[in-house]
Image 1 (cartoon, rainbow, N blue to C red):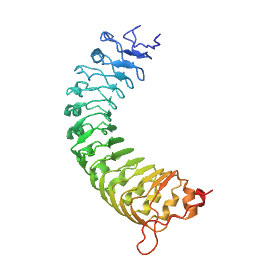
Image 2: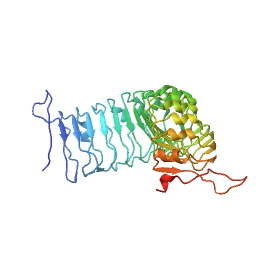
Image 3: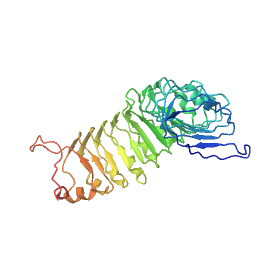
Image 4: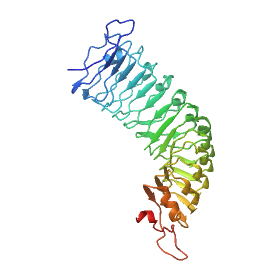
Length: 357
């Protein structure tokens, strides 16, 4: 028995326009191209296997195709140049091959989700012709590609996920034109170089989450990072960043909940301005070149769950007993002083009473 739900628009009378059903393990059937009243196919999280028949891209009025979280294989087919598809979700399958060069035949596409597959090749330059694209996610594939500078033409993008591929080339100023971005993730791309330009944090001010981690991105964190007033997550870990932690981060006090700056070459002192980030739940500063004392003002971050400070050159004394206990940390790591005398290093770490009760 296959439960299914159908609805009809004014053109089709009794013809189904929406399929949304659960299947037993099976392959997608052929011969659906004649279903010219079908608007949506939703078959996520079934046990579908085999390739996607080309019929599914030949349906003249199909707008939404969701086959995510199945076991589909094969390669992506070349779409017709008159395709009506607006949303294509094929993530979490085993689809291989390349992204078709003529992907811009899907000229009405607003959402393309291909994450967690086995797709190879490059990111097609012609993807930049899909001017209405708002969501693009190709993470966790086998792409070996430069990030084409032409991606800057996709000014409608609100969500962009490119990481966990073999990305090369440069992260640069071309991203500054993507002023509508709310989510950007480029992580685990250790051959990607570049820097975070002032123009990026001056123009891409709608960002809610920024993940640029485990790359070769270098230089300073610009002071203009404080312009990102909607930012809730800033992950710049495992890069080649240098210089100090910008005081301007304290301007994100109304939104920022996670700040990951670990595994860089950041130096100087931890700024007191971080104590303004009262919503902060995770603060990762470990494995940098930070010096000076841990600011006592960090005791005011009462929402903090994780604080890592180890792998730096910090000195002085840890927060007093009352301060460390009121933080309620689930994870706290720092380098404690291992010997006394003139050549002592590390932080004096008395055991708080809240850890002994």
